[in-house]
Image (cartoon, rainbow, N blue to C red; front, top):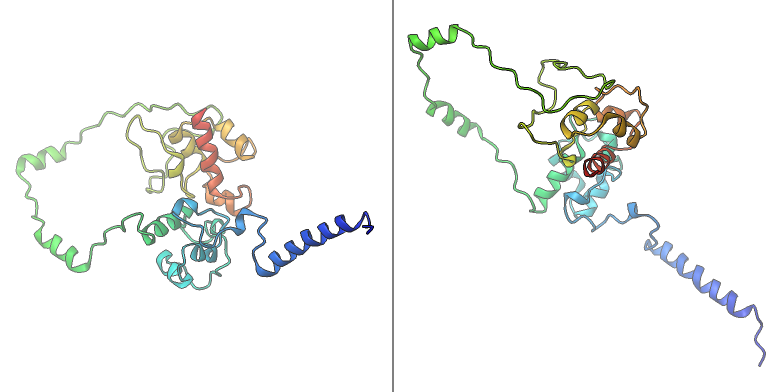
Length: 248
């Protein structure tokens, strides 16, 4: 019996492409890590900015309406909205907030304690009213100038930063204890490039270059604004870049 030379190659191709077709038809064909979400979120660390709200809900088997409630999101936001896109739309929204909420839902982290109205009223009633002695009044009337701490980090020249450039409204970074460095994972969408340079102790020029930003980029621009106008793909990239620069 004679077998045509083309029979086996054709048979192989039919089996190969037939397998792909069946996998695509049944929804089991995966070509990107971004599709491997459902059932694949074991903790908040697995959540990425490119994921949608529906991806997160499916990944932890949570009703998307419950996720909206826990995140305090309005119904006008569609479930297919990417988390990174919400950082430029919802005030003070952070991808890290979603991670925290999911960790609480999965039982990995404890929920923050909330003070009820009764507890707050009881605390107010049980708090003694301080009394002021004449000596204390005199002491308060005489202001004492506190010594100004010497900064442990000198900003890079040309970074656009000057001491005392805060707006005095409490919207700046949370001060770190002396000698401590900001961890990359603690960077928020509201953080500015200058705050990262000062607190994470990374060079401004290296940070801008690694993020693909122009050298004349305003260092006081919040990361979520850079992501909103398309200059950053997502805030997670900044965390990764800062971690790499700190390891150098």
